[in-house]
Image 1 (tube, helix red, strand yellow):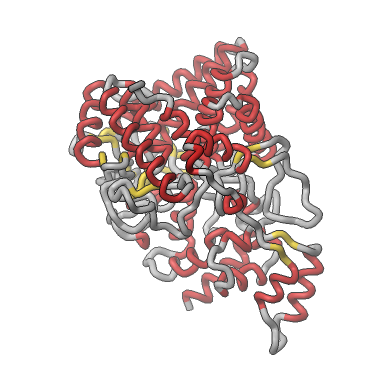
Image 2: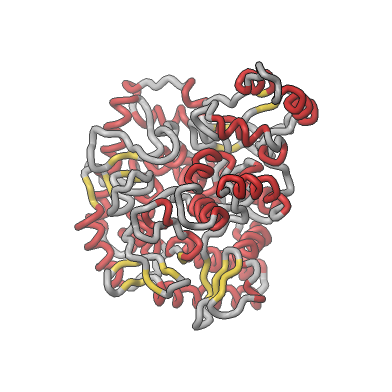
Length: 520
């Protein structure tokens, strides 16, 4: 009965959330579900990214007339009517002897995509008007928060025009859809990712004297409106979409995907997982999708018991990192308005940032743990999960000196490993848990500690992370999406897909850190 209910929900759920572009699930109803649940392709993302060889109507008519035939072969049918996407990074041959910096320079071209053209037949790709850098491997499109860390390397490499092209692409997406999707795919139009756009604009301004913050004022405000939608009608102690108003009137944000059906790029995984939880399918799937919006998909951070994926409660949690990013967005909007002469709006956003900072210090500083943690707004309690998200208040200089000291001591005592900083203290098999480590969190942690004078410790992390990256490169000729920092000779693992190489944000952070290390 449970399976029947879920299938019925899948068939009607598109009436609940109308996308501006039809995703593959809505373009090929029935066929899409059949292919994804059949397990024809080991990676669900393969068919979600497939390129049709005929018009949609032709493919659906053919499927309708053939699907009930005794000798119907689903895989043969798909191969007849679709081409599967390729991974460009698998075609790249590394020259280990040439060294890591030469490899990084080569990868900018391997990972670069030219402006997209509209396909003859409908695909899931949302065309972008300017060149951009993709992460690599199965990630064949631009990704939102990945791109900021990629840009760090582009800045170091002097590729300022590529940074501007990517910022302009994100501005284009904001103008077209009202927000920046997770990536430029139609199946990502239900969610965003950590809002790093304001940092991208700041990076661009610092790299190009011809660009001002005020040039992007309108799109920055549009993104802000996306994350704050519904706040004007929200009562205390309630949530709507991404925004939560706490009982004292404080306004903070959470991750919240507009969809509550299986993710198209992980369709079978989500469908099967929804049968193993006590949560209602729509509630569970919304929490899963919202964790994907966080970029930390998946982690003990989002689990009610700190261990079980079936107990994911993403929408109940106010994430510390998201709210520091929103604080920065408010600061940048205030500065952009100041530049453009709108003093009233500049003062308004300065006040918003001040109020958010106070709320961050109140709701995310866990006195019992002497650490920044997420906050469960539903049961009004601090999360017990200790993660590297605690470094974001240091990165944005929100933490007090005393708080920064406590954070630095705990990170040194518990998170520091031979290859860098582990993401969490839990080993669950999820990819955003120990022993895995990720480039963006190393960068945030290093710079956050730097901000409060812990330069020696920051340099220790930097050296260990750089050594780990170079060690794996010498073994494999590749730079990875994530690393196992506990076992120096082991690759990162866990998650829903095999370890990916390329890799945009690893490359960007590594290039910046190579030039940050003290000269010997």
